[in-house]
Amino acid sequence: MDFFVSIIKAPFTWGLLLGLLFFGMALWNLWKTKLEFSRYRKHLSDKLELEADQLTQIKESKEKLAKENENLRIKVGSTKDNPAREYERELEIFARAEKAMILNAPGFAQAWESAKSVAMDEVLEEERGKSLPRRIFRKFLKGGSAVKDTSGEMISEDSSFSQDRPPQEEASATAS
Image (tube, rainbow, N blue to C red; front, side):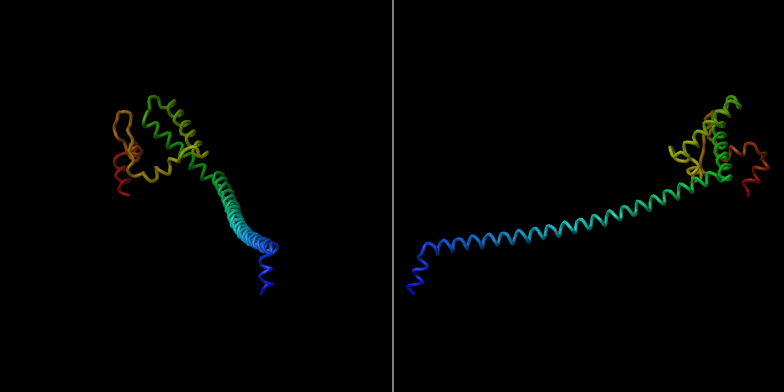
């Protein structure tokens, strides 16, 4: 027992125990730091995987939308080449020009040409995508649309076409 007491009272023993204590604390902190770094690496790899998945999804949707856009561009281009589309376009120009002529017709020839050129410019702007197509809204509002003429009198779109007809044809047109 004396031997044990003499070893414990020696300064070397106290220094060794104190050094082992500090060494144990350093190992403990090193172990905690390694665990934290591995946790950070796992979070980083998970985040990179998620971002890679999102990036691939975005690329796929971009490619899909680009293909769809190209298909729509080709479809629009093919409908412009359609002869029926040209007739519809000309009819739209004439309908707009006629409407403008009904509103203000001081001299028919000059006014007709200016109204036709204005209507052509409007259709060209619509085809370029600079304004909303009026013909779509006219189809929705066809039944109840009315226009004021130069005298301030309300004229519906349908009545402007019926002014040229005799009363018997007008009655038969409304009946059918």
